[in-house]
Length: 96
Ligand SMILES: [Zn+2]
Image (tube, rainbow, N blue to C red; front, top):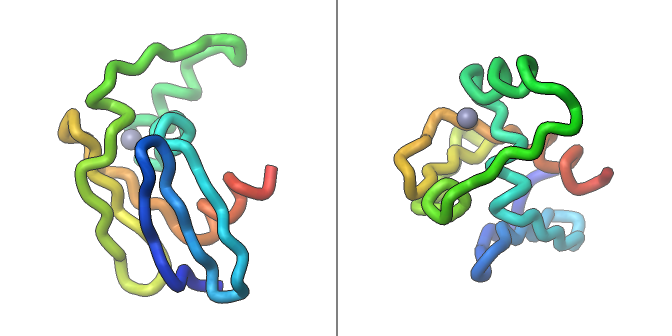
């Protein structure tokens, strides 16, 4: 399954999948679930009830780039840009 269209509103990434499903994922959730090695390691350290506080720049998308035909690379306003979000991963985030 591939995205047909990718757009954003003020707080969400909006994906139109090619099966006509549209999903919205909040920037905050995307940042929280950043799949890069640094963020994964950080999450592993913390207890389950730890709530991370983000500043505005950390949950504001600066750029969205397609990686091959399997993922999106998100660049955040604070400069964090190592998260490669595979389509499968994005699908999993929205089917919870
Ligand atoms: Zn990250």
